[in-house]
Length: 169
Image 1 (cartoon, rainbow, N blue to C red):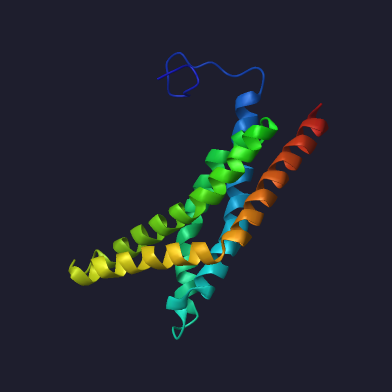
Image 2: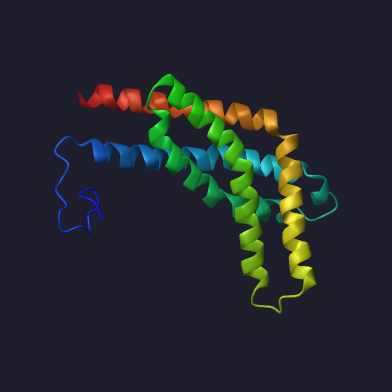
């Protein structure tokens, strides 16, 4: 436990305000990623071949299961995106590559949790595998939209933080 951890006995307030600024950046990154990537996830779920012939509530539920993963990804990458331009490029690439993985795993975990109270059978594994397969296929189909969303996310985070820094100075 280091001095940056508030539960540490050696914890001291940050007089520069940098820690608080990074926390705010992470929150903005989480919210913006959840909104932008949630929209792309909804588009991917609606466009997936597996959702054809099913009620509209199924792809919407699948897309909603991925939103927490998008928020966590945006929170983790938010402070990186406001660094140098190379850092921002790497953050955008990590967001574009990590979003489908995070969405598929978050949705698979949610399906497993929903099916866990019932008896775990081979059908549970088939359902989880189908969700992961659907996520991968859908991510490939919306890859250009995902790349644009990642670029918009980085530009928006950098612009928000730049205007925030100017306003506080």
